[in-house]
Amino acid sequence: MQSTTNAAKIDGYKYADTAQSCAHSYLLPVVMASLEKEMRDKGAGLRLFDLGCGNGAVACLLADKGFNVTGVDPSIQGIQQANQHYPNLALHIGSAYDNLSETYGTFDILVSLEVVEHVYAPRDYARSAFNLLKPGGLALISTPYNGYLKNLAIAACDGFDRHVSPLWDHGHIKFWSVKTLTALLTEAGFSDISFAFAGRISWLAKSMVAIARRPAG
Image (tube, rainbow, N blue to C red; front, side, top):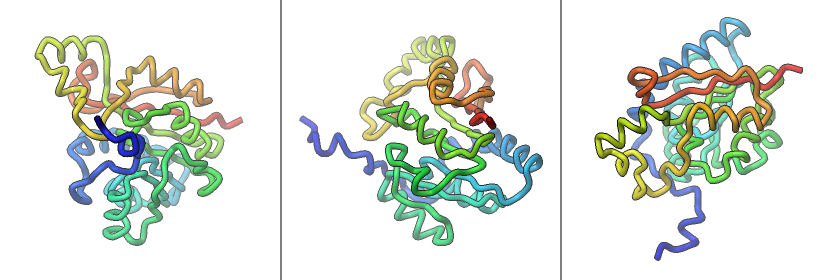
């Protein structure tokens, strides 16, 4: 039987190095399109929070693009690597279960890539994301896409076990669709919610990116 002490920990996710993951090759073009538009509309130097910054690879890229980046991740190893390789970035151990807005303030933009599928309490995650944004602030939240036709295709190819990866320690425990992620973000208070798809054609997309705002008023 797995140790309950081990099972309860959320800081054990491992990173092989400080490189971007394979998912970033198809996620980042979609994310950067929204970020560049926001920068054109609001100017350079926008404050950006990376919720689930992992090994710091994306935070470094965003800082190089001109954003003022702060980030947290519960992975002790990931933050150790990030602090070692990117010492000038404000990346800390923490999670959406903490009162992040009290500690770090509010931001123009929140980016959270491939995180919400790992979260035990998604309402706490969504509430933290909302509270971290200034009124009118932009959230970009990506997660593997799950839809009816894609799931049929996975089942037809006998790929279900690989897709859900039940043997992956600290792996995916939530499987989001457009409908369910919209419901989560709406409940948290977000508005103007739309989706972009990344990797493959939309109905077989590898991931989806929710684009949402904290209402200005």
